[in-house]
Amino acid sequence: MKKTAYLATALFFALATTLTASKPDNYRYKKAIEKGNAKEVKTDIDFLAGELYLDNSSNELAECFYGKGTEFLRPGMAYNEMGKTGYLRIDSESNKERRIEDFDDNEWRLSINPNIPNSVSIRLKAGEADIDLEGSRLNRFEYKMMAGESKINLRNTSVPDLTFNMMAGEAWIDLSGRWNNDLEAIIKGGVGELDLVVPYNVGVRIFVSGLIGEVSIPFFNRNGKTYTNDAYGRSKHTLFINIEAGIGEINVKMVE
Image (cartoon, rainbow, N blue to C red; front, side, top):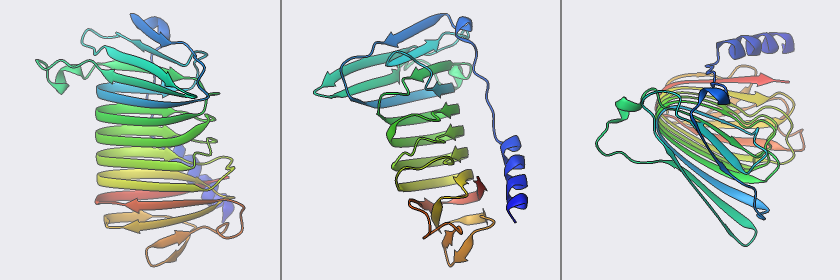
């Protein structure tokens, strides 16, 4: 059974949506925020349209490369500290005379520091996103997507609190890797497809409600709308995932 599960997982990864960010040299502009004295940061990102890339490769607090194409949105970056907490805000400078469709070629490459505990909130209004925060120290992760495609890698983050909301589109979320605590996750979907990756050796309980479509959660034990893997009730930590779906498809895969 394990070999079959791993083979299916390998195929799943091969089919996952992939975007390729341009190298920093290909962007005309860069903005950066230096590290301050904060012990933790709350990051709020509002992206209007185009392609958004976010990783954890920055040695500063945050960096943003932009201005690759002819039609692009300038990011506004603001940061302040109150006590031991830093507040980072990154949003699209508004242009009321233009439509969202005018910025299909807009591209941001954002980087945050992986060593500073961070609570990340992202709003994607239209477009595609590749979020790779593997190994980051995340206290919380919140993601809202109106329309588009998103690939979100949270492997080895052990994030305790996750909220994901998708109105329309496709999303791929990786929650595999090591876990040092429980997870409370709420995933809400409208119309579209959700692919979810979870660890094989950590207890996982998934509750699915409201779906008009297909649910594929192989190698899980089913009791009504609740699905549990073999490690549930046996492992030190547990991933509690509540999926409230609309019309579409849910696929869950396990990896070691």
